[in-house]
Image 1 (cartoon, rainbow, N blue to C red):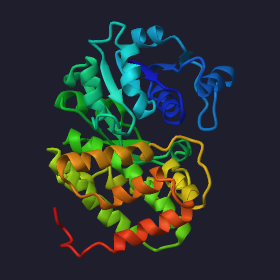
Image 2 (image 1 turned 180 degrees about the horizontal axis):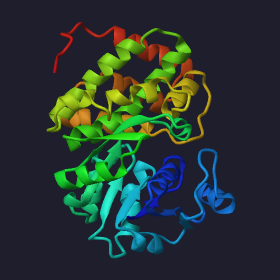
Image 3 (image 1 turned 45 degrees about the vertical axis):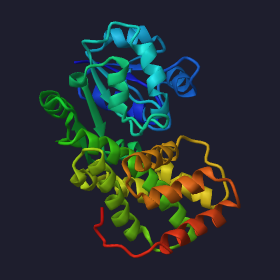
Image 4 (image 1 turned 135 degrees about the vertical axis):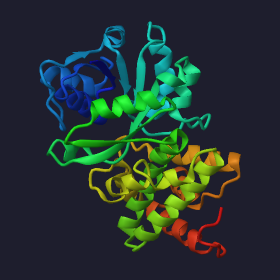
Length: 325
């Protein structure tokens, strides 16, 4: 199968490595000015993987998309709409698009598959690939479970069956709204977990329970199945995001609480802003999301003080039924 992976950062380079090991004809694309691309081009490897020599590495976007039957996209979620304007200049309307990224567009509150549809891609040709797993574990041979979802039942089953291996067990997703919102939202919870790791408050259990419930309410309000919040895309990804030393979002929260600056991409930051807007739009109370938004975007006071005040504000809320909507 001919597959092009657009984006050669941490996750994109792993996907190219993984799909090539599956015997596919893989092209890995990155912009010429991007540091991740330059490192791979010069050395054939990065800090995570060594690319097989049969993988074609290119900065020519036309070459990459022309090669593919399946186009896998793994870039920063907030850059997707602008990136798709470049991609759609080429004859790609008959190709399958797989989104291996987690986020919600801040300016519109749109799910990433919706951004692709608005860019001109048919919903029947779009799938998302999400779920738990860190590259550092995968390359050590440590397996995990993930999910592929799409409105196209045949497509998601074919992709899951073709991509599965002894390293990744794929499940068929059943709710694209819930899968996408859940996958994006877990990064917000990851920031909260990092804060708790510093402040030493033993609240990760409640964070997991109340966080999933909060996300379930939003999914339901948006027309999805609230049970999706308890699947692989959200709750299933908690161990990877809330506890792992490899999690960018957990590390962002930890450094925020220490008053330090995290220099790498933490998708949970813009996602907190997007979820706050969605909560307001759909009339859903999202207390954990609200405090994560505040500690990320409000600059008053030092990081630790802001984080402690945020936790206190959650405890000062009036009592509610545990499973309230």
